[in-house]
Image 1: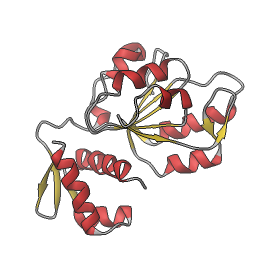
Image 2 (image 1 turned 90 degrees about the vertical axis):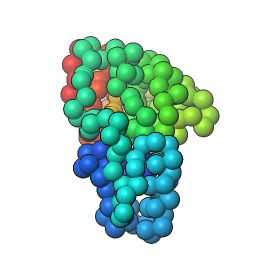
Image 3 (image 1 turned 180 degrees about the horizontal axis):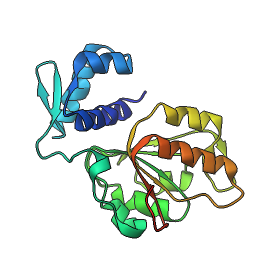
Image 4 (image 1 turned 30 degrees about the vertical axis):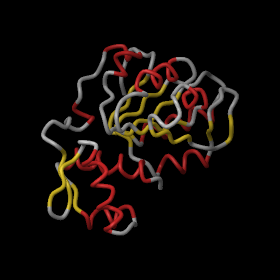
Length: 196
């Protein structure tokens, strides 16, 4: 697992539980305690966590868990972008609206963006945000999909997943999008009137 993805998951766990412990994280991610200490220090240096004896807690200014954030009606791109906060790990998939969303949130500090969609990956500048492009079979809509993509996604935990539904006829991309949605604490369907 990439260090930035692990750190995004650590931050999400700290926000959900009010704090995290070294031993718990070491076991969960199957890495050494010194590795977890480095992760916590990196998150603390970015102002996302406060180190405490045996672990870390989210800063008082940190947001509550993603599931409690207010939802935008209509899930417009700008309203969806307003949900993204520093240090989050988000999933973004889609062809038309998703790349615009990715470009809007690219400057959010400490953001990790996970996508199976080449157009989304191309919409963000190199090195900002941390980008995890999921591999798999390339579909007609330009998404990476299938068992490899889904297996990779199942190992991740996302704060928010933003999915623009795949067009009819791209069943592989649709299945991958469903997997992205299951990995997130908060799920937003772009371009549709409802949130799921």
